[in-house]
Image 1 (tube, rainbow, N blue to C red):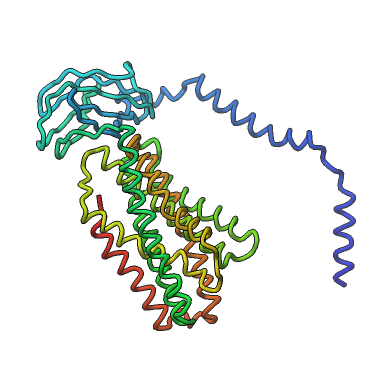
Image 2 (cartoon, helix red, strand yellow; image 1 turned 90 degrees about the horizontal axis):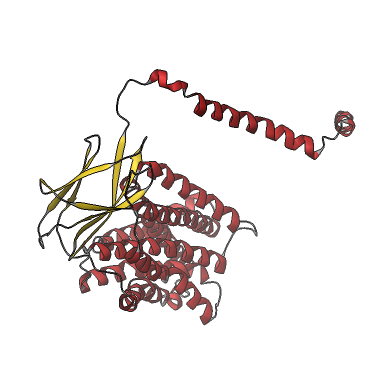
Length: 402
């Protein structure tokens, strides 16, 4: 009966005429051509003038960088809104001040420029800058504490690399030294460690998304910061999930690699924050703060080696995982100290958040396969590991905010 139903359908499908490739391209091109013609007519006819009420166009200005040196105050600004923006005046502490714009002229939407203000700022004092557009719109930018901005120099790369090694690679390696102990904890102990990994990754995901959204708020409106963060995080998660599952469910070394990648992308964003703070002159990187970073990242090394307890990887494998998880902090510090923009920081952190979410899903699936039924998730060992992972990351994060 079923065969009789399927045979006519197959015969009907075979009898249908085959559409040529040229015809297929034509049918794709017709709606695209119609869209182009409609947009062209809309622009050329300018019939929207009928809705013009005479109100001035919307103007927006975002302050992306602030540099203070012996020549005064330097601001990198980016225009937004619906029309060109022309900067007419600059006020510093309620007084109009001469300034030089580079490049000169009107700012198109999404374009940026530097404002060089020869103002004798005072060390440790608060200053408020107001940029006035040609239409009279005022944009305010406070400088809470005026300090000289460190200038990027070749000689700084060495100390910055050493700092990146100490806050990125060293703690991950210390955490990975727990590997021999993890091999002797037994089944329940390993489930505890896997749950601990999920807990610390869950905290990293929330913390990374929070920082990405903050940078998204600081970016120019034209970049659509918040939607960009959410969509990029989701896109990276889907992409990595698909790549990770192309050869089946990742376990062992493959799962450890994904964990190291997710942590590495997070550490890259962490390095960006340190480098940007260094450039802004607001980071007091004392011993206590660096020790806080170290304690905060030790648990990340434990999470990297947790899936390897059933294997015996070689030393080069451990070295590669340590570099993958920790070395991006060095690159992040370099980039953050040389060039900084909130939309790029938001994008980098969103990528890290998506990678971390993919790792959480894979580690959770690995733990579920080890524990069996869903009820086993709620054993004392897994609940204790999950809680401790979140708690340790929360407590140590108190000391690492720059």
